[in-house]
Image (cartoon, rainbow, N blue to C red; front, top):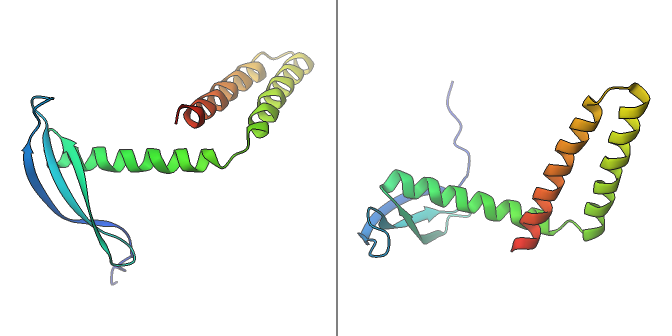
Length: 122
């Protein structure tokens, strides 16, 4: 079986630039990334070594992608989800006489508040 090559972003070159003057033990690297369309971009990355710098770069890009997706959600959706989660959790908890429904609802509320804070902190 031949392995198929997916078109995706790849780091094709990484160069050490200098040691960090503000954070001892960290280095600056310039990473060359080949995009899906074939273009190349150079991005600075910071880390203790090259692998750490690449992982920090990937983590930062994933976080930015999450923030972009949460910014598209209108404000009223958060309010409706918050009130709906409270209502459903409380109703199921009292009718089934099982506090686990309320605990699941509270966990969902924490998730909703976290997503809202991610959206508003930017």
